[in-house]
Image 1: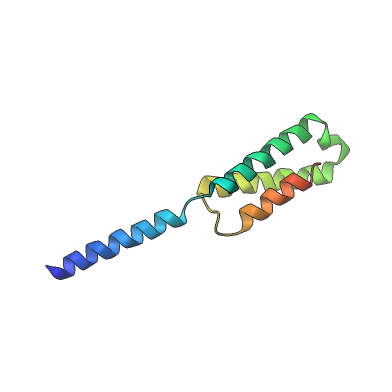
Image 2: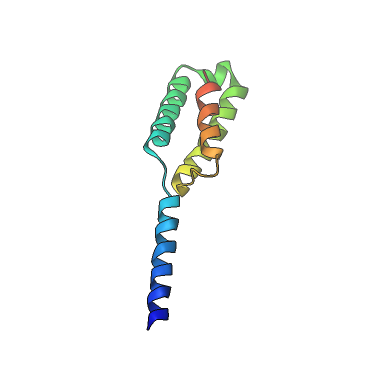
Length: 91
């Protein structure tokens, strides 16, 4: 019986560790939302025609950030980099 209890405890601990590692902080989500807003404003301002290379770069990084948010993967470090580039490029 004790071995089953230990196995259950280990499984519960692993589940908790996985669940805690698969979350995005509120600050990161706020930065992501700000980056999306900045991209939308740049789109409305005509950045696609005025700076097509920078716009395309920001658009690609926005797609990457969308994927990272959907996967809830903040720990890879790519999400923060993508947010920074999205904010800088089209502006």
